[in-house]
Structures are given as C-alpha cells and as structure tokens.
Amino acid sequence: MSFVPIKDKVFAPFLASYLADSPGLATPIRAQAEGYRYNDVPRLLRLYNQAASTPN
Image (tube, rainbow, N blue to C red; front, side, top):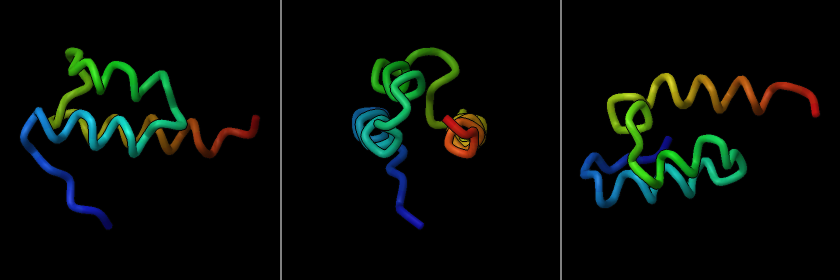
C-alpha cells in the first residue's frame, strides 16, 4: 500500500506516474481533468485494474 498525497500539485503527478502504463488514464490525471481528480481515485483504480486484467 502506498501513501497517496491529497494536494493537487502532488497528487496528479504521483498518480499519473503510478498509472503510467495506462496513458488513457495517466494523461487526463496529469492534466487534472474533470473526472480524473482525487475524489475519483476509486473509479480510476477500477478502470486501471480492469484494463490490466484484460488479455492483450
């Protein structure tokens, strides 16, 4: 388990780099787009896990 910083200036780069192997998530997180912010973490991690578990 990792500590996730909650301040936007730290959170967005942290999570974007954590999910870097999923550019479709990392890019809007880094841009702090609507729907890709701290309060959206549970949904974002579900999306990431779904993508990671899908065979290529």
